[in-house]
Image 1: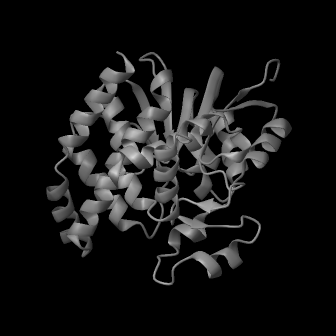
Image 2: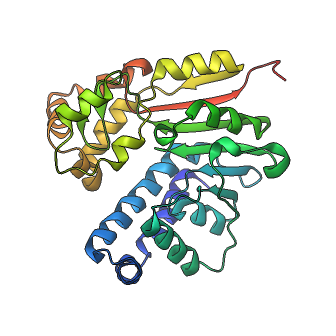
Length: 294
């Protein structure tokens, strides 16, 4: 199946999701506002499309796949329905009852598929308990893992001999925090929070960030005997997405949306395709065992 065919099938799957019904049922269970829950579901639907764009060139039916930080499991359920050998890892964490409820409702809705689930933290992955995977991937997850180096080490431990992992996350070498669309100085997160985070913002996501950077990933790979590759043109693709994706644009209103509009109008946007990965955010990097490594 081509990437465009799979994207069309994913779009049909996501479009068919009964968002309002799920939101209403989750509101009854959690006491949360149904409209706000529906907005969360819309965000996760959008991120499922972004996750497919991340991995679609590497998907093969014979590969064992592991999605780390599967969230509501929308993307993993879709791949499972399509016949892929996918396992979803989403740690069981206290304080996330809404997300637990939404995940349960989505899995119940698609009861015809049996999606293998892991609820351990990524840092506890182990080949003897969990086996090996040909592709381990995550989208906007690594920046929320406190010990991200330990987690990547554990993920490397469950790779098959020719397997690799693929991760998309912010590069905080660039002074921009995409979850809140505000500036950030990665070495001064506390000061950045005081200066830039709106007073009415929910700081839960901010407090979970590890402010990972391109240089840190390179150093980790060198120490760990892993070969690393960074994709180019990510800042171009992000700003182009601001132009084409209304929900994504809404999350990046202000300076970023204005910059994207200015660059598009002046024809300068495409030049950003050639920006070095170290100067770009987000970053997409792959890791695999280096040639000759044990």
